[in-house]
Length: 300
Image (cartoon, rainbow, N blue to C red; front, side, top):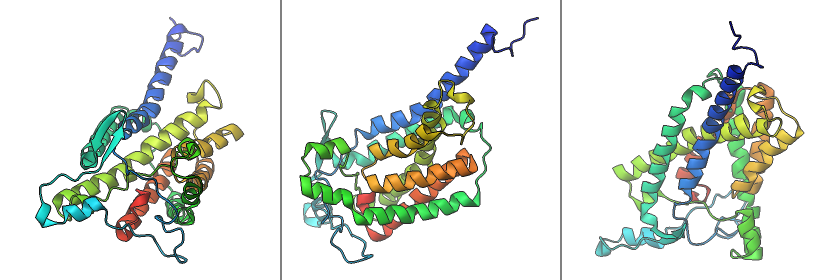
């Protein structure tokens, strides 16, 4: 009788390789799909500057978004039915900004379907959350808002100019800055899409981003046989990866540097995947609440 549990057994190695491939797909594919579909989303035509983001505001004064031309026109009953949608060019296509809710919702649906398909892989870790994770999430949103209030990135854009190559290299372009209550109205459609935004940013994004970054990438840089490395076990390269890689794809560089350093500390402290997800979810949810209450849509 053959021993299939023997690592030298071909069938055992084949099973291990299959599990590794499934884990790779589970942790990488959702974020890859999310970011690919995100590339289709129409963006604001201009990058945020220090003045636009409240860089010269008084201490602790939060910046409020001024109504856009599109919002003003949509609120004017004399021109109802006229299409004044802002258009931006994405992947060689001119996509009107009015299609942002459709593209975003489609992105969430497709990504969620992939996550649910691989859900057993995520559930290899016990679904439990420590109070420390909630506290880190609360502290995290305060740090994120504080770093964004400093708006160092906006000052750099002002200094170099939004068309400078360095700005493009650093990925300092604006976020979607889409106000559903302004664009769709304070009605069922507006609040429904706002709920979709909260679901995506506070529930889905924490899972797929933490899975890619901590369940896959931080372990992968440590060893080829990364699935055998316990979650939360790190070396210097893994820590640097967990902090610096997300800085590359977040426009809020300082905030990302501080926040991901904090959650990397949480990961090492509790060695719990769902703690990292929970901290991420709390921060994103509270940030969304701040955005809605203050009108600081540049953060969304």
